[in-house]
Structure formats: C-alpha cells, structure tokens
Length: 433
Length: 107
Image 1 (cartoon, each protein chain N blue to C red):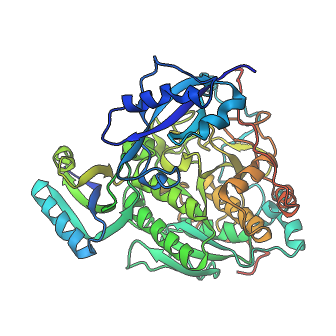
Image 2 (image 1 turned 60 degrees about the vertical axis):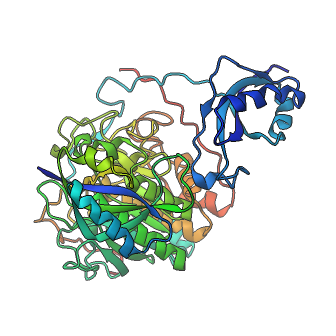
C-alpha cells in the first residue's frame, strides 16, 4: 500500500525546544515501522488554545505540541496514533490554487437590479419555497424563537416579539425607529408564522452611513448566548447587517480572531443557528455605500462570510439573482455565499429588499426545519438547504448564488426522513467569460 | 482624531467587575477614554497558551488615533480591535416603511 503524507502533532515539555519533539518522532518507527520522518521540515509550534488541552490529553501547565511531517502506510496510522507522545495525525492534504473568480460581470443569465418593483408578495414567497406544504403538515414554527438582530422590531406591527435586548435604553425592545428590523421580523414570521421573536436591537446608534457598532453586537450575542443557556432560546439568530467597506475596520473585515467573530463562533458552539445576509455589494448594481469594494472577493466582510455561519444571498422568486447581492470569495472563506433566499417581494414594505430581506426568510425556513427536527445543528441546516437548493446561475456552487435558491419543502422532507444528505461538493468551478 | 476601539484585556480569572474596571482605568494614562458601562467576557484571540489564572475581557473606549500602539504595549492589554461601524443591509425608504399589503398572516 502506497505511503501517504501526514502531519504528526507531537507533545513536548513546554519549557523544551521543538527539537525535543523531533527526537521523540525519530523513535516513532519503533511503533509504526513504515513511518518516515521528513527531517527537512522544521518543527512548528501547534499553538493550540487552552480549551483543547484536555481534549487531546495534554497538561496545560507543562506541555505543548509541535507539528512534524512524514509519510506512513495507511494501515499503520493507528499505531502512530496509539503512541502516548502523539497528539494527533493529520492528512498532509494536497492543495491547489483556486481558479480565479470570473473576470466578467456574472455568469447569471438573469439579474434583477430593480428592487423597488416587487416580484410577488410574501404569500407568493411562501408558496414558491413550499412552506405552505410544510404548514399543511402542522409545522408552523411552534416552539421556535428567532432573534432578529437589527434596528429593533415594532411590536405593534409584529406582535410575535416576546422579549429583547437594546443597545439604547431610550429605544427599548419592541420599538423600531428605522423600520429595517421590523421588515426582517415580518419576513421571518411570514414563512414561520408561529415562531416567537426576540428584538435584539444592535443597530440603534446614529451615523451618516452606519447604524451601530460591533461592540453592541458583541453584547447582544453575549445576551443571546446566556439566554440560550437558560431556556434553549433563541434557536436561531438572523443578522441582516454588516460592513459595506473593508476600510471601515480592516481588522474586523479580514481577521477571523476579531472578538465579535469569536463571539459568533461561541454562539454556534452553544447550539444557536446563526444566519447572516451576504451583503449588498455585488458588482452589477451595488449599494452606493460600497464605494470601490464591490464584487468578487471584495464584498463579504467579517463574520458575514465566516465558514461556520450561514451566509445568505438575495434573488427573487422569478429565479433572478439580485445584482447587488455580495459575491464570494468572502474575506474569511472562499466558498461564500452558501445559497440565496427570496427578496424583492411585498412584505412589510411595498418591496422588501436587499440580502436583508433574504436572510430572515432563510431564518424562518430554518425555524420550520428546526421544529421538525429540534436537534438540527448549524452544519446540518446549512447542508440540507445547500443540497436541496435550486441552481440559479451555474450548475453546482457559484460565487453569486452559492448553491442557488433554497427550497423549504425538499429540505423539510429530508429533515423529516431523518436522512440528512451528505455534504455537497463545493469545489470552485471554472468560469468562462 | 479619536476612534472607538475595543480593548482585549487579560485579567485575573476571579477578578470582580469592579476590579477589572480599576485595572482598566489605569489605561487612561495611555490615552484611553473608557466607557465604564461596557464590560464583556471574551474568548482569547490568541491561540497561545494562557495560564488558567487569567481570563480575557473586552472593554470599550475612545483613543486618539496614533495612540493604539502605546495602549497595546501595556502588560494586561492583549490587543486593540476596531469597534467597527455596522449598518443594515438594505436602504430604507422611509416613505415606504409601514406600507403593508394585506397579509394572509395574523398580524
């Protein structure tokens, strides 16, 4: 059997130089005879976070680990793993450059750049996605709580609001002076009508081109996490906000270690499903606030495009991609967006628009799936919506629409059958102009 | 010109909120105008091993541009992050807000 390349993580005393791990690795063939250490590869500190130590059987005070490279026969890997000094064995995966994003405007044959004209109503969206068939099965979002992280939610317009958090005590939860959050709330319960909502008002600051600060979002997520620990809600957080330009805060835009992004990952780890709108800086008809940051690789910033979140682009129910919907690759992940949900329909406004409207629709669909299968995880929700999505632009995944338009009914059937599909292939496609 | 920042700070694990604010107030000497109402626990942004007797917190404040490096050089400060401005991802047309069609749903 042909040897395969592996990365071996080996323990050492934290006070010792990396060469101590090298010395241990030299002895590994005594346990796995086919192992050949690549001595040209300098030991590299693994720098695991503290909470990994117990998981990997390491002493937090006296030990750390380094990465080494070598080859081993696949059938002897288990012997390597059994060595007490070996923390883990990883594939030294072959990698290749991703094909360049398309140079042309878009491979989407149909584009909608006129959001002010609604293409149907929220009721049409419900039918288009197949939510009405799910409702007929008696699943309408009972027991589901969705957090709407936004400008607030007008409780008179959307009575489903039961609690909330506010960044501004002068504008308590249940109030929305701007209207955007109320639109999002309306759209979420439009597809998931029995769900309850939390009005998580993070966007309540004043600014010429912005509505809040990421510090408020950190507090809000912290509040949601604490609540989830207490009563298991909200099960879903819908986020129709983001940064329009990298220059607004480059460290948040591009560094996955920014405290807010870590807080999002904490929420997901706790069990909350987190959806983000992709953004409105697609290259065909971007929002004016995007400046030069439009199109491929320059329009999904920060947590909106983290690998673990669900990133939702916008399209209409005629199968037309919204030409302003932000395009991948995201700053933090190549394969974004994940998929699209409907926008440009009459809902709270004459036309609910933006990836802002698409995100809560997706959150509402997930609410229905979550009621059908309460143990549904973030990864499972993303996977089932991806594999059941309908292509809009190009076959498979693409930088505009991800896997295409979500379809609630097929996703619901997959969830109900308890046979969640395997992860879809997301290999970047080659584009032709 | 001032900018709003988040200060990631390493503090004793058992330090009370009051004690954390006392520690943070010393950063005023290095240009930080602290928001005394803001304090939230944080995951460490660095993968480096942190002794168990410490935890990380976030504070919010304003600092004169150019003073971030001085602030970041203080022993308890792990990193200064942008308090990024964020915005809704739709242009709100105020005239249209609240113009709702007749809905099949019970609002």
